[in-house]
Image 1: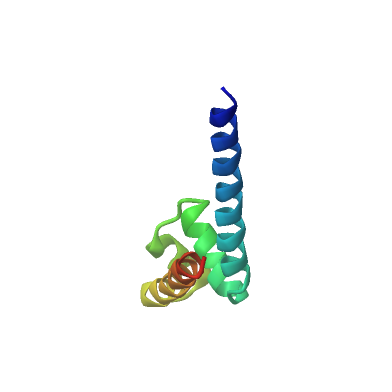
Image 2: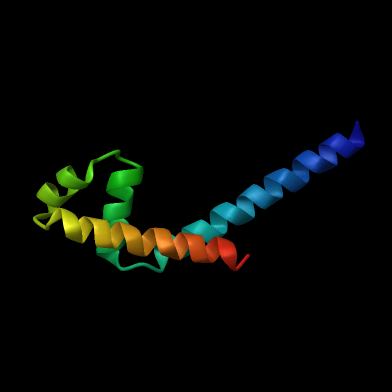
Length: 79
């Protein structure tokens, strides 16, 4: 009974730490990179839609996404 509660609490703590690491990695990115990331991951916009909305090329959107995803991956590797 109590060991399960303890495991659950540890799991919740670990998930919160993961979220905090990812949030910090995203917040360290330039404003445009964060904007593109949120448009894609939160709003569900395609790269093409983002490019059109921001008047940039799809390649530019890809570069920003690569930058932020690498930062997230590095944040998790450093944990």
